[in-house]
Structures are given as structure tokens and as C-alpha cells.
Length: 206
Image (cartoon, rainbow, N blue to C red; front, side, top):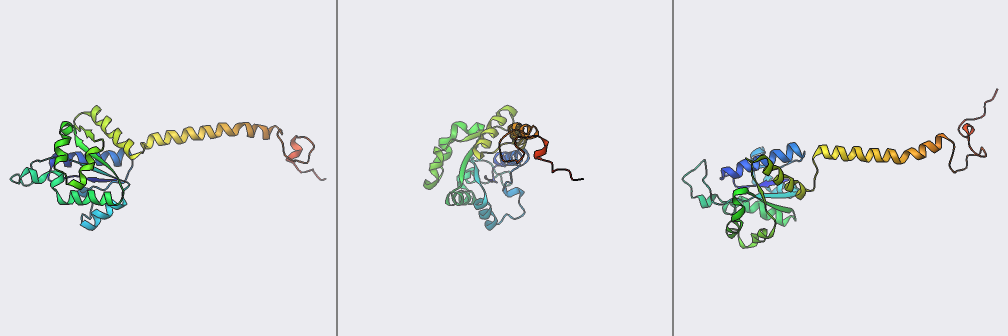
């Protein structure tokens, strides 16, 4: 999974790292997030997008760059960042599933955020956005569960439970056949004329 975000926006970075932690720790997924990667080159970025199963875009508007607070906040918005746009277009070109994510406080501002998007990317406004709130545990759980459903994966513990249930069902289905074999019942050409232990034991030679 590839997570795209504006590194010039502190809230976007916090949300990206929190989502990275959930996807890797809770779902056991491999995730491409620039601040976690050794190779942050353009080539590595494009490779990461094209090899990912899905693309998550954390969309934020104008914000203060903590490293350069005198920068124009508008230049720090997701749709103003050159590499954010490159990543998104690579994902589209590669046919990846795209999921826009926003902060809960931006839920009422989706139209405003999308107004800054280039013409070829405005279709993203028609996708159901997922809003996340890191400071509310219950709200966070609802949001990341939507992300999980988008990715169509289950937490490892639920997968283990499903595997155990399948194993129990398989064992239950096999019990009648095993019981029949023990009792010498059932069809088949055994050559003993009708069952009993002789079907399985060779005659004893003295």
C-alpha cells in the first residue's frame, strides 16, 4: 500500500505515520511511506506506487510548514505539491485503486480541497472520502476499519479464527467417512465378501 501526503503539512505527516502504524502492525501489510524508506528517490517513489496494491492519498489544504513557517501556506497543500501530483498520476496510470483520506475537521471542506485539484484529478471528488481523527480512539477505529474494508483485508487474528473454523468444519465433514472405514462399512470392492477386519489384514501364514 502506498501512502501519499504533503510532507510540508504537519497534520498530514502525523496522520500518515499513524495510518502506517495501523496498516503494518494491525493488518501486517507492507506499506510505502517516504519518511520510512531508505531510498526516497523519484525512481523509488514511482516503483513504490506501481508495485502497490492500492494508493491512499491524504488530502490536506493550505497549512504552515513547520520547517519553513514563512512559506506561503497555499504552496503546502496536497494539490500544490509537485510530487504528490506525480504519485497520484502514476497510481492512475497503473490502474491502482485510490482512496482519498482527510482529517475529520476537513470533512465539511472536501469541495474546497478539490477546487484546488488539477482538472484531470478532480474525478477524485466523486470517491467516498474517509475521514480520520487520531485523537478520538472510537472515531479512529471506525475510520481505519473503513480503510481496511477498502483494502479488502482482515486483521491477522481474524484470519487465524477463520482458518481454525475452516479446519473444524473440514474435520467434522471427514468424521463420518473415517467412522465408516473403522466399522468396515461402505461400498468398494474389498474382496472379503462384506466387511470386517479381514478387509485390511493379510491371511496369517504358519
